[in-house]
Image (cartoon, helix red, strand yellow):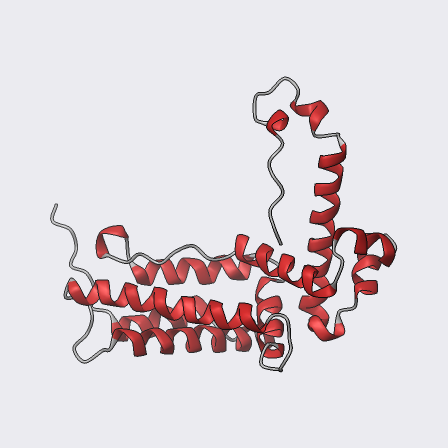
Length: 218
């Protein structure tokens, strides 16, 4: 989905901002956002295959015909939902120790994911469906996993260059293992949230891989 250009009249501090925000562009943007939020909820609960456009339209309170004016196909809507999912989740991992602790960045992101209603459910459901041929989310999930492996691999390489990776740890294999562990822990958390501590177990794992940084001299 392409991003619509910002309305210059609605810039902060503009005298015309309140009036501009009530124009047709603002109304259309708000309606699109409401549809994406509804689809986020429906796909998280029912998956892409089971989450019909009619269900999304019902949540928004509009007809399916009206919904199709904003998103002409279900796959267009899915891509918008996936883009929204990315907006409310991840930040980049530090690639050098100077940028911060990778362990703390992972733990912080895991906590943030749990705090956003539906984000873990959506990813788990759509990831499972993405293995089926022809699923429109397949490329997204495949590219995202490959991107995470690269990102974590680069972070582990940065730690290795600083002498903070335990001996014998291969950065790329460690990255693949971290992606698998994180996704698996989140799936278990969805089924038993009171029993599975995703941030804590990720920290435990990373402390087996990463050498603790020495405290800064006072």
